[in-house]
Structure formats: structure tokens, C-alpha cells
Image 1 (cartoon, helix red, strand yellow):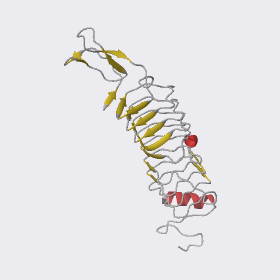
Image 2 (cartoon, rainbow, N blue to C red):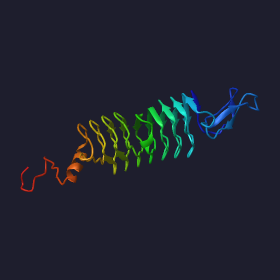
Image 3 (cartoon, helix red, strand yellow):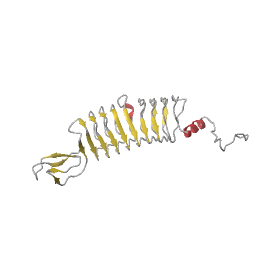
Image 4 (cartoon, rainbow, N blue to C red):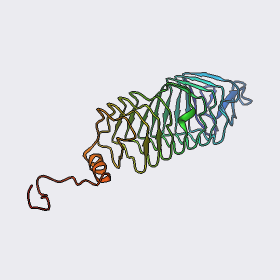
Length: 244
């Protein structure tokens, strides 16, 4: 597996120049074997990558369109506002990456896992159909998932502040330990979706399909309150007439 990391190499060892990525190996004038020269963008020279690790890249605004990544890992990389038009990610992992406002039009996601990534403002609405993806501990503030088919998709410990779900299919999806302050759900299919320990979640059952959805007590209270009802604590509260 080839590993790409950004670091400035300054010594050779065991007849090889020591490098960690953002650099490419070429003949070494000191030993006649190999020296490392800078590579600002490891994706410029080819359009297909397999079994590679990209670590510590700084490629804000880079164009990564029309490329195929198979079983690749991206770690601790700055990929904000990058363009991924028509690219394909198969069995790839993103860990601790900044992908804020990336342009993902027609990006195909197959078996992709995002972990501890910043994906603020990403509009997933125009990615390729039927994505296979999961999100863990991600910041998805202001993201849009409009019209997506995300059946059985897993979201764990993610934050969805003011995210948009419009005509989104989340049937049997698992959105556990997530935060939904200001998130909007409209015309979504949430049947049998699970929102275990979700915070600040509000779903209007008159605007969404919710049969079998599992929501926390807080959500039920918010819903009842929105319809002018009071939810009593039967252990301590009494109605106005003094009866339990």
C-alpha cells in the first residue's frame, strides 16, 4: 500500500530517501538511487488510485473530478471546497478530514465511511443515485440531503445543525446520538428510522411519513407542545383540577 503524507524529507536511509507524502521519489544525486521532490497534488498525474493512503494533504479548492478511488484512505487532510464531479469512491475511508463545502455533483459513494470529518455546507443532493455511505462523529452543519435514497444508512454521534432533509428516504436508517438543532425534515420517509438519544429533534408527522419511527421522549414532548398539548410527568404533575 502506497502512503502519501506531506512532510519535507531531509535525509536518506537504507539507500532510500525518507519521505512521507506530498512527495515523489526520483534519482538521488547524493547516492545515485533516489531523492524526493515536492508533489503539490498527488492526484494530478493519474485518474485511478487503488489501496493508497493519503495523509495530511492540504488541497483546498483542488479539482478531483473524474477520478476513481478504490479502497483508499484519507487521513487528517484539508479538502475544503474541493470538486469531485463524476468521481467514484469504492470502499474508501475518510478520517479526521476537513471537507467543508466540497462540490460533490455526481460523486458515486460505494461502501464509503466518514469518521470525525467536517462536512459543513456540503450539498449531497446531486451525488450519484443509491449511495452506500456511513457517517460517524461528523460535523454536518448546514448540509443538504434533499431527494436522496439513504435507506438503512448509519449516522452515529453526528451534528446536523440547520441541515436540510427534503424528500429524503431514511427508511430504517439509524441516526443515534445525533444533534439536530434547527434541522428541517419535510416530505421525508422516516418509517422505522431510529433516533436513539437524539437531541433537539423535531419531526412534523403531518409533513413526513413516520410510521414505526423510534424517537426520544424529548421529541415527543416537542411535537405535543407544537400542537398546544401538555405532556405531564405522571410522577409529580397534576391537571388544573387537581387530579392526576
